[in-house]
Image (cartoon, rainbow, N blue to C red; front, top):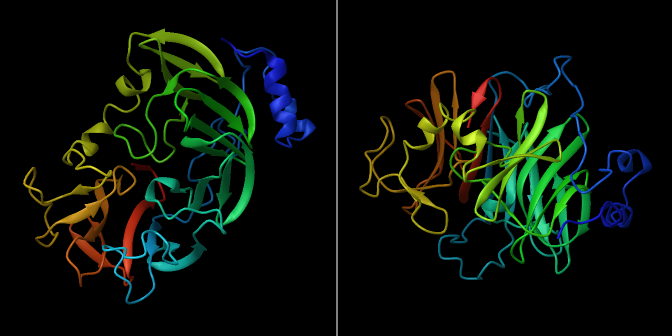
Length: 331
């Protein structure tokens, strides 16, 4: 059943949206054109505008010295931190745990445009933070499948943790809500970049979802077309980029890859051994150079970033979870 616009607007008011944001709400269930603010003068916002050229951003989950995070004897109750590095210098530390409303789960934090975005679900709400500061929260428990900053605004795409259904939001306010349907793609999946399932097609904000065994393409909050089971994005925007993802083996469970599990040789310059690697946020490609954030499975060795043949160690007791390189890059 399609939701009437009245329900969507009531949800927006309950979420604490301003009158300015409510003006962007859809007039009917299909949604309305939602143009991203122009931050570059070229129509589409530059996803890395304002960042220093050639900077390397790395995220890590760090445990206290002496604690064996591989064994995790406290069963997830250790005082862990998420650290954000810029050019291998720490620039941000965010405490995790129920009191902080931040999870150390690598699937629940993301480096986007040099900032650390986190998502957290309470018993009834979804909370989104940027660099440790809460941006907004809304009713309903969702996994974020896409995050897309545009100027001072933030678009999110969340899949219900209870099963089917999703919401497309601007600053926490619903632009499109579907009680059924499954978002195609997301963070950590092949053929999807650092923004997850949300992406730009020229000046339009797009994503795809699966309903009744067909893929529906959404553009600016409007169901535009139905494709026979495949994402438009998969066959167009991501074809060349997908080559780099398929350099790696299939996942080995728990969304962790081992680069030397027998399915492929290690890239040149990486010491022999097995490594934790989180797809796809653990790899980045820019101007002919591949960057990999790798954590040795072997105790006593430090995690490092492999940069086209050279390794740069990061001295932490923990594991690397993501990497972003400023400039004209591809994840």
